[in-house]
Length: 239
Image (tube, rainbow, N blue to C red; front, side, top):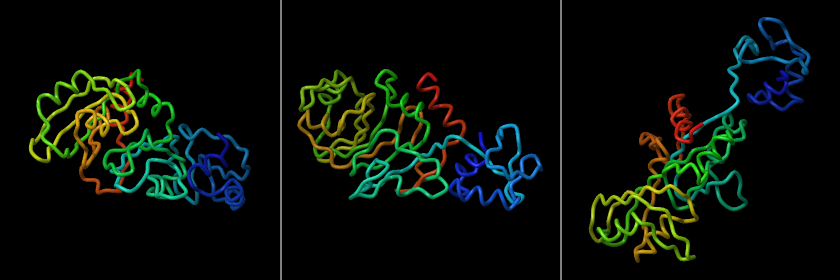
């Protein structure tokens, strides 16, 4: 990889700014001063420093966000704030994007990455990666609903959903439930409950594949995934 591309990718400025930085003699590779922007380096085998500070190069970034309501799962929008708008500059330089989407009024676990291959695998219908949601429902949820979801329900457009695992945490005039599904149709959880004559009042994604939401994250906060968590996601997709 060219030294100017590496430094630009790691947030040291535009290519033009990086070339100016190189001219100052502050960039070294294995203690040798590098001024030529076209110099190729291997960041895994060579030490790159800027003004004595080691540059920790990484190609991919993997973030877990506790998405708040009112923010949309997109990279940019002309009207609404996006999840990408919530990221720090040091993370924006990797040009990450949300893995799938949560509705504007839905909270909870959202993965954000620039690893297109892993994102594709996590969203692929063939991989059946489960997603679990917590919801408040405006009515009593009972055994008949559990059975209906177990066999799949017919949505308003005639689509037959794959089986879902519905768990009633608290039944009452307002029921608390958890629902695990393996697909991600538009507004699917809301439409599944509409199919059985009920309405979702509040929705939060609490798990994707083997990865639960870090409950220490406040709404709008995010953190990098650990190496172990990244490996769990890869195993879930068979990568």
